[in-house]
Length: 55
Image (cartoon, rainbow, N blue to C red; front, top):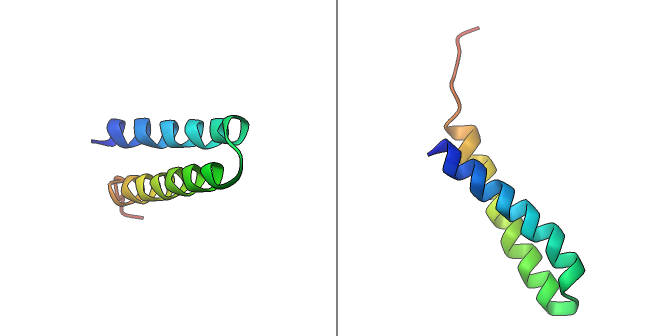
């Protein structure tokens, strides 16, 4: 599960960067918003599935 989340996070970041070169205007805004929300969601999922260690 974690490896899939890392893969989705990396792909979302890559597509987000590439969209700034490939698209303009409304297309870029939509793609950037979707990939940004995907990155936030997967980062949250990774945070919630982390190993918790006692201090």
